[in-house]
Length: 401
Ligand SMILES: *Cc1c(COP(=O)(O)O)cnc(C)c1O
Image (tube, protein in one colour):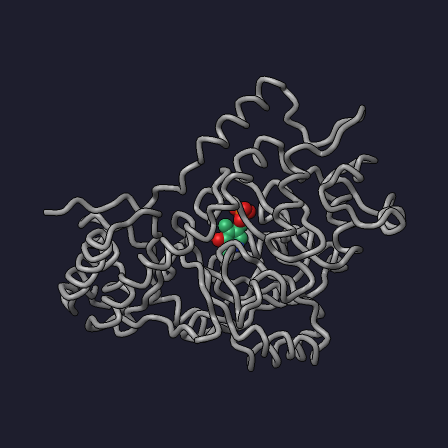
């Protein structure tokens, strides 16, 4: 029997990052700012590199993607009690960022392809009067971003993109994270760049950048940021933005910097594994995989599939059996949140009743993480376990009412 790979294995930290990090620790200068002759150090360097990578004017490095989502909402002018639209397929830190900003979440339906339902977006935007859309490209699935952008324009919606799963992805040649007023990225270990924790906000808007820098806690040292907006813009916001202490540490930047050039290699590796497993599952009885449009270039570090004919109890039996067979399957249909996974019914501040279709889709939706470096044999072995386990689930697993 083949041994199955550890799906939880995070991307490796390059040796050069360790050398830089160690020298930094020896110097003790781990804070990004310095009063006497500071230059912003490695965090400023990361901001310049990341802005260049994304083709944006400004990058603001912070301590998590969740923090960057919150800062984007604040900078977009969201105030306590404001309605904010969000797609109903995402991770807890997204409704959490709305909660943090005091916003009222207005959940929007998703399609079977796991992307935002544009028809429902139009209805909910009109009914709620919301002026901001927090769009999560959850698990790397991009909606028709050209159509979405046109709709936002028509409805007067400010778009913020949660790009925690889309570093390296694009729609019709344009990178995810550059369609709205701000794009927010994660360096959490399960994402495309692994520093444990960390986040970056990118924008072309000087006012958004200025507020994010000041809110993140730059004191009067904001000129040390890697991509500072013009002085008069900073002075306009100075004194009007609370210091929320959400800065990135220099140690995180030391770990992130040498990983940026590895992204194309990592994306090719992830996509090769994803596509091989997906092709096999798509042929198997009972499995439904989301359709990927031509315009979408994804960077798929995980794989999603549905078993739409299955009941709650059969899903539960499938997940348990897959795990027992060595494949750590995650399921979006659990009654209570489990591990990292959750669904609209679990977000205390949101109204799951508003998105019955999204709840129905997630009831039979599963997910596996894809570590880097899977061999074709690993991929086939993973797919075979999932197919075999699913074939063994029947009505016998249903609990009589
Ligand atoms: C991980 C994740 C986040 C939050 O990232 P952190 O850096 O952990 O705050 C937000 N959205 C999605 C979809 C995520 O997967």
